[in-house]
Image (cartoon, rainbow, N blue to C red; front, side):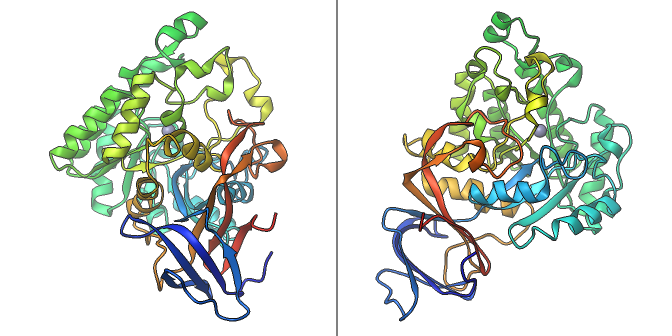
Length: 433
Ligand SMILES: [Zn+2]
């Protein structure tokens, strides 16, 4: 670990400024704070200088949707390995989903997870979500007020939807009084129970039971409409369909306080990627069609979709090696998201850096009311240097996660996170490698 207190001068980086512009600047970092951002800063004597002339400097990313597996399944991920995966991917803060074993469905569990997380909190701005229902079983409301009091920043039954509309209505009503954010995983389980991929041409060819887009869309409309009727804000965890984007756009136009996220994998991959039963592409909601992916990209650019969130879902190789129909849903995403988005959206000109920062750093923090990170004088250091000319190798040795269920396993992607700093610590430094 390099000297924590050593001041740094990052020279000639392409800095994504708070104004949303990309400017070539020098950035002076002293005592865990950004003390100056300007062209041609003079280096104080003895300072460490980093030539960042080919690099992009962006505020630390924030993931509102990560499944870590502690407690209960520490063989696939712990808070520590999740934090390692995050920082290697330039993610400096996250919200952990509550589907642990036991689930995070009461104040005591929130407290105990936050206590365990205190060992990683110097490396990660760590937050936790609580369940909407007891045990995540969708029957009775969990202790929402108690969980919020102990620090839960959102409530969700992800990776499941709330099947009973009356329970969802009561959760929204209760959340309004408390001001806690309800985040919905949208799915109609009665329609998708046996499904393992998108219902359509490919599922017929592979002989796999499908999950129709309408299953997600029916629940999406129901949850948004319920929130509107209860005069409560709602966040939709991960849109995957073109019609879903249209629905969001319509309610936003009406002025409703609805927000939505999208995963990198739904922005990049389609049902075609399932190929010959590749379980690393088995996710819930499933990968959809090419036209859905295009609509998600457009929705992201237009701001109909507010945040990019990974839905990082680690599983052991043993679990993912089952036959497709029986394998669990999910892929990891914390450390691959930024290089994958760079390769597939930024480099081809489908997304610019300022929009990526808005959707994957600023808006996610606003969603849960934590201070936005910015590379501006006086701000706490919370930044990432990304080298578009570098490469990222995602082999087992290079991954921070304990799980390898990513389609990028053993692949090399263009672009590399070369440095991450949070507060007074340089957490990752590949500049000398
Ligand atoms: Zn989900």
